[in-house]
Image 1 (cartoon, helix red, strand yellow):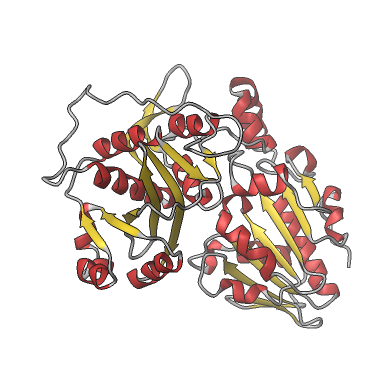
Image 2 (tube, rainbow, N blue to C red):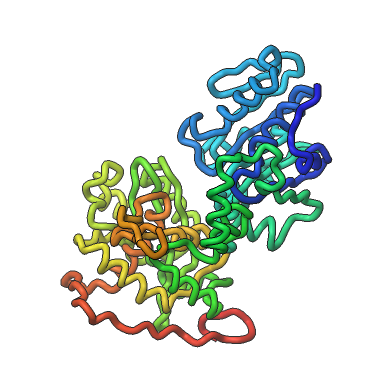
Length: 431
């Protein structure tokens, strides 16, 4: 049969291990890939895994998109549509749906002929380390569809700055989509005139330098400019202190930090979701670090996950400190002061750094009459990124906390940041 889709996507039928389809809004990327996969699956037997970084339910997947395309192409007599799988009645092709962060997701990738990763801009550095060696069937392919967000994102770095050899790259924008929405044309034109930078990002898929309203934007940018993000190895003679944020139904995050000579060596970061405390302690022990204090937020004792927090931690040889309640603003100020003395390992802390880059203030309902934009709230958003940021706040509050307890910082008395000078030559925070 003949499937109608944008000519720019024809290279999807050329064999290649990696295929990256990126661009701005309304480019028809996902729509075109769905059609290409359905045609591939109708012509020969395939095992296709449609993946994304997190998938709490089938509603988070491209299942609905594929079903819509089956109907649009008149292929209902060829495909059996079930809740979690699509099967071709004649070729035996199966299409399944997975979240890369789900515990058993990687097992299903091993036999895949094609893995389609949707919204690939959100994929973590940890997932990119695990996915390629897992998709190892002869002739297997990995397809990405994505709208770039930040130029520091792992996906941008891996597939634009340092692309794998032989990768097919397709840049797909609304101008390449013959079925682009006419309703959106006035909005596009208005943004092109009023906010050219945002137009480049939203409609042409160009990455941003930073997220609007990012809480730690200046501090992270300064760390990048001063070369404080690079290779920061573990030092055997110094204990590792950990800052934690607990989550029983969502993300739990841990930072691993060595403090010496007035500087913080941020050597590692780990996060996961839907795991118990023992899982995280096993991860900590597997790293082989010598540990000092573990700093937990004030609400740790009230979490279902941490009913026996102190008992469990001490049985495992840990020195736990649950911090008293302090205002979020005080904690954010502490983190800002500390970040001027932090050196981050670029590989092991990649996902944690991205959490800090995306940690941002929300928006209010107040409209700025000059720009038409909503003003920023004083409260940071509570989302996936807030857990990593809160874990670092636990460390910043705990490490500086005197034995008799923390003292709030009086207004206007913040210590000025005095970052270390940038060093030339080999990367070392201590020369």
